[in-house]
Image 1 (spheres, rainbow, N blue to C red):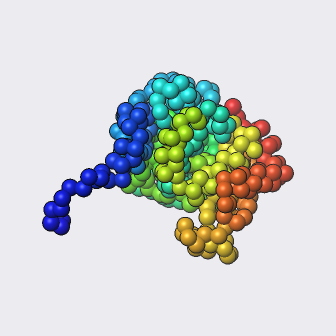
Image 2 (tube, protein in one colour):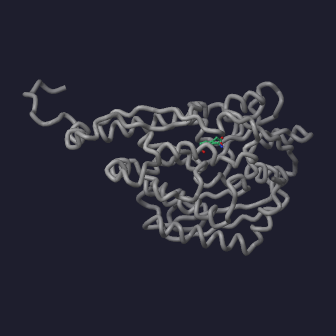
Image 3 (spheres, rainbow, N blue to C red):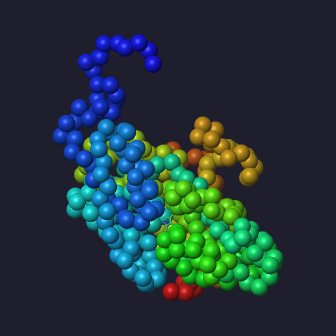
Length: 354
Ligand SMILES: NCc1[nH]cc(CCC(=O)O)c1CC(=O)O
């Protein structure tokens, strides 16, 4: 600390300055959230960023969604969209000012009255395994029998079966749902040999250390948008949207835009076995450097579609210059979707068990 100086007449921080510029915005912002630990963790993290950026207080408003109370299997009640619908409704009705969604749970159709004001920097997009006795996937397979792997996701089931086969083994996938504790509990209770989860979810709960393996992207592609968040507000809240835009990471936005375009173009239901991942990298042979924000020149979009038993699977990739705007990312997503459809993707999705 330097010696005390006379207190300046101007506000001490940029945030306070902004708050003073717009006194009518000083009531607390209401951020609608689901009540699960994961939703609360990611909502609180975004709330903290919004407080820092705007100097406004932000309060969390818990909203119970049908998906939280129903014990039905997700594919029967309409997939992850059920979690999002109630939050979107609350934003649309002005009951809350904004909502934070896991991007992968967000339906690809964007309602006119809502806008994704920010897509913050993405976390690790990969899936992980939490396996018994700290075992790797290969070790589980080597133990013989058919290890029981819990997942409620057709995408994960499809690719995990295919991965096991590529290693000369076989697994049994067991549908599970419930929160992270419940799922991991099945492994500790000995009911399952492993469960597959999103790294980002565990990480946001501070539990990534419980993962026994980060599943390589070459084995299992994540759900479109996995690891990313969407900060949504009413389209009519232009001032708020402009403030929230400061949380936006353009690279994450173009990547998830490409992935979600692929999903939409495949006309896939949200429980369909579609994986997609776009990464930005420096030009050159595939597998070259990851490419940082400044050096990336290309974006590669990978997509996979298959049957839940993993016996049929189409995986392709498309590479283009780093999109200058989300619209350019749409082009790459559409192109890859067309190629996947030409290779029979529609037939594979049609075969999925409902
Ligand atoms: N399916 C529910 C869901 N929605 C978002 C995440 C994790 C966070 C993310 O992917 O961004 C999870 C849990 C999981 O799939 O393990």
